[in-house]
Image 1 (spheres, rainbow, N blue to C red):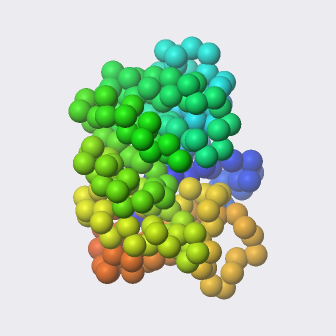
Image 2: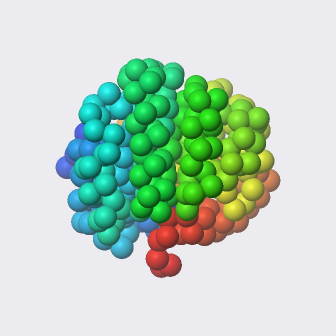
Length: 262
Ligand SMILES: [Zn+2]
């Protein structure tokens, strides 16, 4: 199984990357995509992917939180990184109107610039959307037909938002949010409406540690080694076997990100 969202460049993992990757391998995670969230972390993600060549790949992009740091919408640094062998998607990019860490017009301009770049380079996009569904879809739809692939990672929306995404050809990343009985209640219902060929699984480590891990880990830091657990909860919610969820999500990861078969 492939964890499509690992923030291995987070300071929470500094100096511990080899151990985290080894633990993931031991847990049965057969590959991971390292998320780039700004220019610096996209560079670091690329270097780490090269260190774990054949096991890890990376994305290159600027998260909406960091959209305010972009001063050239041609995205020269992202464009340069996109040519590297281990970079398999443009992103993380999108809109976040929950935290509003960057002004909304700037978020929208930077998101649009990423979509245009992905179309030009014919690469899939790795997207983020929080409390911005209408604007997100309006912008995404202008590029949808010309993108080779699109993933909305860490989906936490409603059923109607999910249907909009599916209608527009988006694949859906599900995190350990689904393991949270309280805050993940709606997602636990909605996750069954994702067709097999659109489902992707991820931890978004070090964030979003599954709340139902037993025994409760001492650290609050999420790790890719918990991906099999998340797959189990997703399987339960969908009324499928663990093996089925693992198998279809693996095929989807390979197809969308053009990863080599093991
Ligand atoms: Zn995100």
